[in-house]
Image 1 (spheres, rainbow, N blue to C red):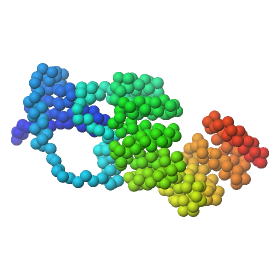
Image 2: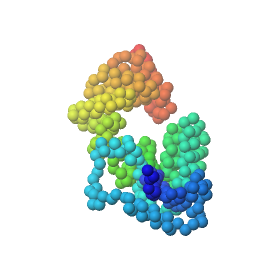
Image 3: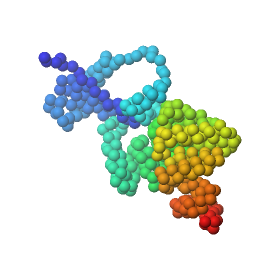
Image 4: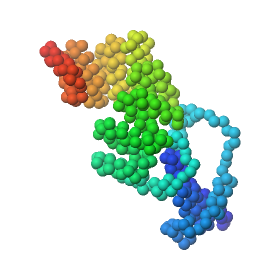
Length: 388
């Protein structure tokens, strides 16, 4: 039978909630299509199905605005007086897997101008995609130029800052990466992505006090992101604030109990506590946590390195050698594991293996060491070779 003609409503709100761009809403009534956005659009689809002529420029749109407003009001289901409760970890994971949790904004705008319109912003989004294609092809120069061009034209395009900083980080230009994120933090103060990326980068370059301040700003936006709790824990751990670090890692794991990095970091905190206090419980807890990290990710070299250190502090030399060998097998350039393995071989009297491990460590890390550590390393290798 013939269907009754009715209004068809449509919306595009993902860019609004995830990026702070203007929302897009509209309706189709018979042959007329109206789009409500900062740059309004109206099309006669009977005559112009490809929407090439925007009639909104020449018509009074009050009636169309009223129709859309009434349509939304009549068709919206509103729960009044609903309790505001926090979702548990499983619910959060389901929401994230379905795409309902992404990068929220600190404050969602209520007023928009033409510069916030999707039509204005999509070309920059396309340029961002071109930049990432260049990056994946190995053309860092083109990628950096494209991202820098976006920032020059649109100071508020948050993802350009985070992507550009990541490119500089991969080139080990940490100073430039931090500069880019600092500029992004100033120009995009409500971008959760910029705030948290900035805080994480600050942690990685050992600016722990500033990192904690920035990460807490991210925490004020949302408090259910396990990565944020993890890096806040790292910052406090590196400052020697072990109890605060433990609290943050435990909060991280309460949100995601399958997060190997957090188990590894929490294990490192307990190991640090054992070195400081010599409490047996701390070393046993560290071992259990490192094992849990490995159970979740059997290819996690850092967890093997941590477990090796825990075994060494427990007096289990063979156990530590096994773990450090495994760490180097998984990551042949793992500096800490190579050095630890060399020292452990030397302690066991396996001098040839010790010299090999430390020589390999020297080849890859010598230029990064202070002069006195270079001298100590050279003397150690000479000493070991003398006993070989």
